[in-house]
Image (cartoon, rainbow, N blue to C red; front, side, top):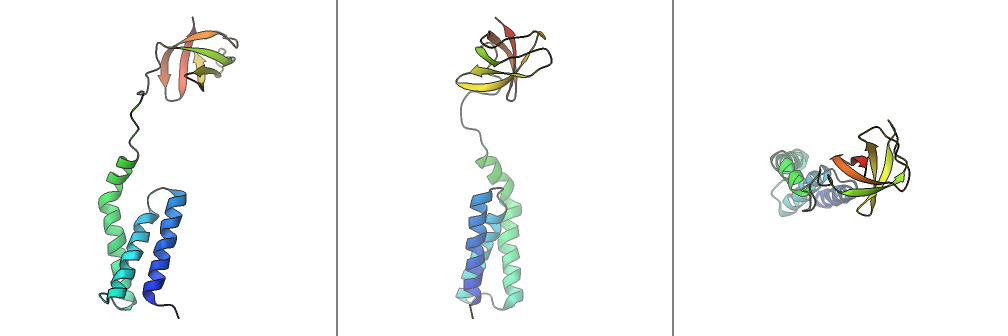
Length: 144
């Protein structure tokens, strides 16, 4: 029969592996909690299933509640670079026709972006345009 500390360690490792493949930053806390319980059982600090489950809940949920929001914010910091909306005033080239009420595509800084005409005009492929504003990943353009 497998000992309790080996089972908790196995559960912890599996949860950490699943966390690495899925992201979301939830399962990692439970994986670490299971590994902590494994160590506590191995050291003889916790005995019996009730003590193990209690230690697991404390070792998993408490850090989750206290630190997850801060860690997610820290991990999701944007790398320094061009701020959103920095494209205004620059030029791009139409690569898929932009028409009235039709979203097309423009090439800007080596990437293609969704684009709309601010004047409601038809902009054929190859037209050089000026970017008037940016909304997320969509550029609003006008012919030069």
